[in-house]
Image (cartoon, helix red, strand yellow):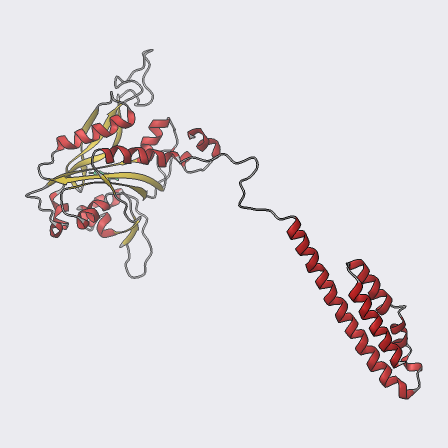
Length: 355
Ligand code: DAH
């Protein structure tokens, strides 16, 4: 009987070898290991055998059964792998190919476009474009901009502080791009003509404020620079953006880091500065004032130069002007967008209008 089992083994091994589909293999399994298989019957009948045959038949039978089970399992696995490979080869997709139909090429975000326009204009006026850190030290954001500790002007800006265990309220998200004035002066002696576009952060959210927004800072330092140069520079820039007929006005204001300080307005490009439209109605854009408020500016305060005296900024020999304004505000005016938050909702229906 042991011999017969060994014959079955050879036969079954050949059958497993020959099977080349899962279905055939299952047939082989049923034929050699199923309930009605010869080997199964022999193992079931062991108890009826003479005692001296039970041992050898049992051990050979079980060994052969286990061996065949393993063999079939391995073959199942091999067939599965082969099938997978075949289907991978057949259904191959090149995910790097362009879609069909090709997706339309996108375009720059309107805020980026306005930023680049401003950069182009200012590069044309001889300014360099600089960038600065968005996570900033209190020193650059406030102290070196002539906001002494405890100065009420610090409260004017709802600052996000960065929680660092050691330096409580020393690290923050910059509330304006002005800190780069000091960093730029630290990095190069006068004359210096630079602008800093970039993200700024304040705890503020409504139709004209977002916790993250963009500003452009400008700084010009050299010998004999005056407030008239500031006015001419702003006028040149704003005429490039809003049209050649624009005028500019400056109103006295206060900023800690400029003296004197001003706010600057551009004449309204909808009503031409008259405050009323052709049909006699009040201009809605400037609310009948004729002027649109844009940003802050002024002559660099000598105290600010005091923080960069080591880099060659001596208030007795150089003067300078600085200005700052919001990019969103410019873009809202350019495109007649009423709510600043629309720029950051990333709704394609909004963004695709700028293609
Ligand atoms: N940093 C000011 C703000 O965010 C704006 C500003 C005012 C910038 C006067 C300047 C300046 O450079 O001279 O409110």
